[in-house]
Image (cartoon, rainbow, N blue to C red; front, side, top):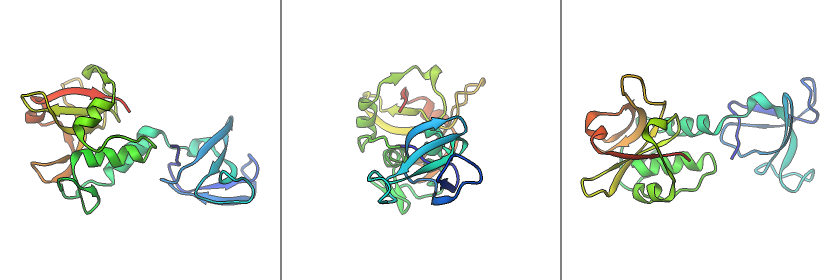
Length: 192
């Protein structure tokens, strides 16, 4: 799914002085049909229109399009401070895999609900290749995946691994460097 990084007017023609047609906000789905340099032609499925059965058509500045990773992290960060609740998937309470489930949903990626199933559904990448937006998976001694987090940056030169996760020990969604007890259970990483 494509979205914008700020409220943006969709215009009739690819020009700064073109007439405004409608406005989109971050989180609204945009379907990109064509790009011409600084302008992108889109339809907005949630804005029904007789102009196009797929959604309201028009042009917007290409620079207004949000990267999927930025959207993923923005969605995950919107849950910072939300209480950890086993099985939760909302801002009333969320668990680790629910956080990843909702963040992935914001970029149009459908994942299984539970961490172990998320790990099984995605191709693993080398832990040294992790970059922002990738997922970290953690397992019990028996190998069963029991926790998932989202990397907020590539691993740092000192070995720190910045991440965001719904922490069942702290009982809240936090953004932090991976704690030592988590490093000890880190088993894999994957890219959406």
